[in-house]
Length: 221
Image (tube, rainbow, N blue to C red):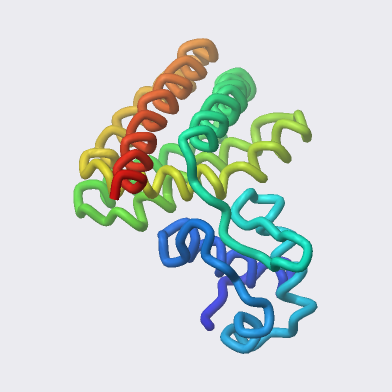
């Protein structure tokens, strides 16, 4: 198992399994047998249990007494609740970035947007999807509200899962994301916190509808 560098082994394991869930390699309600998975990943069951706790905090798996751990289901209610709540937080974050940036602070953000544009033009969906979330996490450095940061960090993996579903549902989703990012960055440059927040919430509303269509199709199938 090739794992990215991280703070601890358990977090490396959690990120590895999270990536599988986000990209649909492990489906809704799929069971994650502890002993089998520990052998597969060549890790101890203690490290795996710690990873499961992290994945639970990211809302990607659930563990039930005597029934073990499984991938969380995806339902219309789950999707609506996530987008309604998280994009309120992300709108607040966009406003904080617009109000708090200083000279040179936005170079990293604009660089990521340019790289995202390159990936869109190359139709590199998976890397483009990852870059979108690098941008979101970059913004976390501009708010001094630790509770806002913690809440967003815990919910971003679930949003990654749902947004990847949107990407599979509509081939133009990357182009839509790029156009939105460019508008938001322009609003941030202009220190227009209200417009940056509104653009982000509008984007969330639109993507939510795409994900709901994907959920409906899967249910019908």
